[in-house]
Image (cartoon, rainbow, N blue to C red; front, side, top):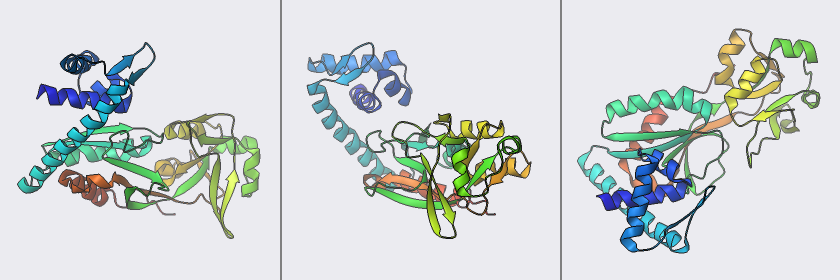
Length: 301
């Protein structure tokens, strides 16, 4: 088993880009993870990784070994899935990812409930508003809020997610209330931005159909909750999921802007690599999530 554990460590280190991240993902210290890599290099008498103070990259033979090691791990995981299917008891690790707001409010509370019902399953949840490569990052299930683009992944919709343009009363008192979508050009729009982020425009629903509005602002962030906080503090107009700002709207801390031309709703659902469909624990978790979260983001009007 130590050899198989070392293979898993090596695969995750390559996928996550560092020994620290790979070890953390497998719940071991960087020192232990580093020793596992060193054991493999000693076993085969080759260097698998090039290490510098800033970067870790696989050697040529390390890249070839990674491809083979990943296939071994996938085969073992598939074998475990077959056994789980016959035994009727899901077991093993499920790796999840979700946007920060969705993860904190919806997926986080879901995890303990699922694990209580399935005590032999371990869940590792990673939250980020940045886009992730599900296949390359070894993700089993990704919660998604937006418009899915990758046809190579299986998309299962949970619900629609209305969005609202919101601002604090104080901001609107200082800068005026937009009377039409064109007025957004004169306002500080708070954007969710990160490397390769698509959000430099907002899609609004108008009487003439969807309309793309180019928007800008003096500062942006890669965390949606930061945008909501800035809006609450009176710094600009934010485009946020309705369920995330519903309580602030009800309390008057935020005001809906341009309610007659709201942003197009996003879709809330899960993305799964097709190769994972044969794993019973993933099907069980996906079905559980769809059942438990149905309508969770639909606050209506």
